[in-house]
Image 1: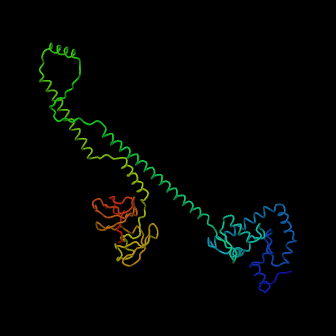
Image 2: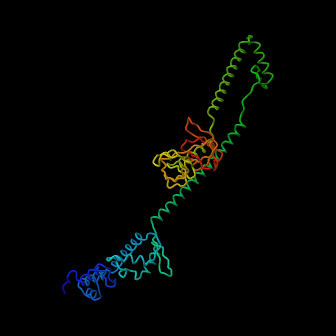
Image 3: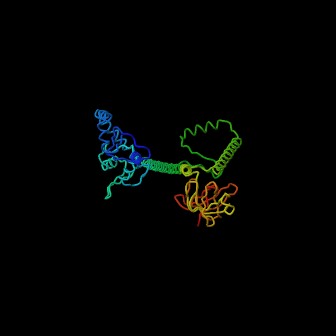
Length: 400
């Protein structure tokens, strides 16, 4: 039978049929051939090509069945992920979207005989969230990468909390040991030997030694037999030595007192507090410093001269380096590089925006213009009442 001429109604109908989706029951998966009607499908089943494919399938049916099942699952999930994402949707809608492709893998060639069996398999495998309603089965794709990211973030937060808890425990133990050492040193000082204080340098120190009378008599007799020697030379020499020792002791005391005044002794508790301060500084020191409800100054002219060096309040932090400001009743989205902190008058409230005490409210005590720094009294938190010194860019005026 010859072909119909181009442009005739029969040729146009055949062309439309070849482009559109045909009936699924007239499709041969092994040969990947779509027949237009039942007669054509019957002719295909008796063809030599189809018989050869059936022999190949009969040799190893499990391999072909598993391959078609994997291909069907992969393409179905691809349509679900790309078209619907993680949204909850009817399983039949996804299937209708999937079979629009003429060359799709048909379900009757897989190990799942119905769409319900396939949906139940997806739920049991943890690939999708499935639930059944009066309207049918609903599925929602589970983004495994997002779940892994959430789990990694949770593990990271937990590890950071554990590390911080261990660090706090270590610091408490070190502080306890430092207190015990300090208490022991105080007890040793109070119970140890004290310095001899003499009221007069001229007063002689006399030691009385108990001895036998016979020994004293012998010594007296021996001393009486020796020639008399003048005591003036010895007494002068003793006085000079005593005076020299007194001057040396006095100088050493003055030197030690001066040394203590210049460089006070640091305790172990002070060292621990300094280590904790350095740890907080390293943890809270970041490149971004934007916070809500602080007053900043706009340092760019791209919004016009009216807003150049104008002060505004940060109403919303869009991201780490961008904020929405309320400037003279106008909302501006400004980057951090075009903003500066604002220093109020002494006694006003400020917010520490960077460093160890990031996010802590404080009262401005003084401004050191020669050092470009501020003296702040912390007004909240564990360090309430502590006085610190910060550079200009680490604190800003807080909205009342």
